[in-house]
Length: 327
Ligand code: 1CP
Image 1 (cartoon, rainbow, N blue to C red):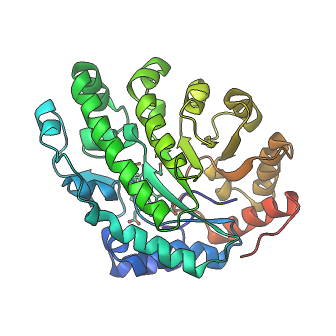
Image 2 (spheres, helix red, strand yellow):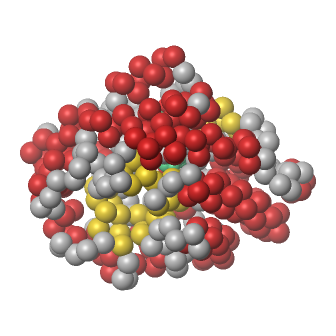
Image 3 (cartoon, rainbow, N blue to C red):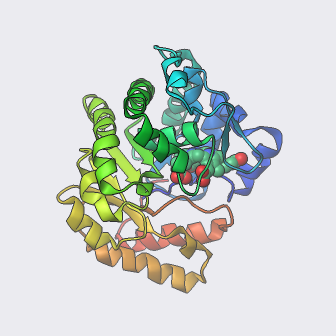
């Protein structure tokens, strides 16, 4: 088991560092990124560490300026709204811009025992494109959908660029020691299945294959995709990450014979402890002891979560899965 956003604002030691450093400072300095990655591992006996960065951080290699408003989501200085802007993106990403993430992975890999996996990650092309086009977070993804419907060839060109960037970024992470990688397609659920199939899936699949060529397993995580998990499985990912909007056993039927990751609603971490424990057991019952279940939340740990609740969750999963991992 591991938890999305296991590093971050719910941990007082993270908040203390953030008083002195910006989010981008933490991404830019390998020792700090490694420190933040290790913070949850010092508290909880998790089976994996996810390297600290942000899905938008590697976009600097395409000359795209991203800032993070305090405690808020990302802001893109110049959102991409015309095909001309996509033509003007550099043909080759500046790989030097994201090498520090590799350095952070090397530090974390050195610090952790081999029984704890180091997970690298990147944003999947649709989710990255949505930030680039919207200029930040969105509720409707209307600018993104409109762009894709009006300018199909420019959309495909943008996804080609993001695909190329992401493959290089993930290859660098694997070379630095990442044992697995996760692609975050957090907003794919904004799309109808047909559009996902034709305008997104081929690019995500290309990235998955390019990483698998290196012998490293890939997790594809998305939210709101319960209606087309069979298509998400067509990415070829080794593990499909699912949110809480579908029961784990039903999701498993849809994705077929492969590993699954999920899927407790992170809101349960705010519930009374006995109810949290019962909710954990319900997820495990749906997994039914079958091999290939990675326990995780259905999305990231919420900032309002108490670290004690996370400790309760981790202990409950480990009690019921019948073993304790080495911290
Ligand atoms: O100031 C802060 O500390 C702000 C919070 C924060 C953090 C802790 C942001 C801003 N990014 C991060 C780090 C981060 N982002 C990690 C490493 C931490 C870990 O998992 O342990 C990871 C994996 C991400 C990935 C990420 N960033 C995603 C995909 C996962 C998801 O939550 O769906 C997305 C969509 C982003 C964009 C982003 N960055 C930050 C925020 C608040 C957001 C989401 C904004 C939105 O809802 O649109």
